[in-house]
Length: 79
Image (cartoon, rainbow, N blue to C red):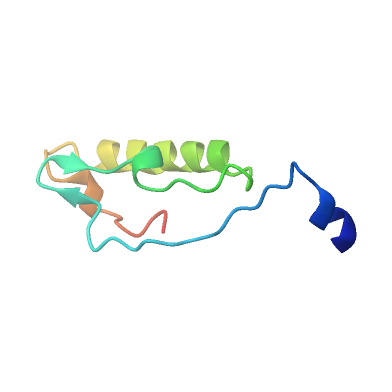
């Protein structure tokens, strides 16, 4: 297999990296979706993370109808 990989002209590899932001929001602006977390397309997790992120955001917005910052309710929810 390793020999075949050396001769392949269509071999693709991806590196993994993690960036930890001290804050995902500033004032009335928040990073959500792919702006906040974007896995490699090879992981197959894009749709799952989109659904989880939308669920957490909807819950935070519904819980904080008084105008407080919903992003600060669970800043670690998807990390």
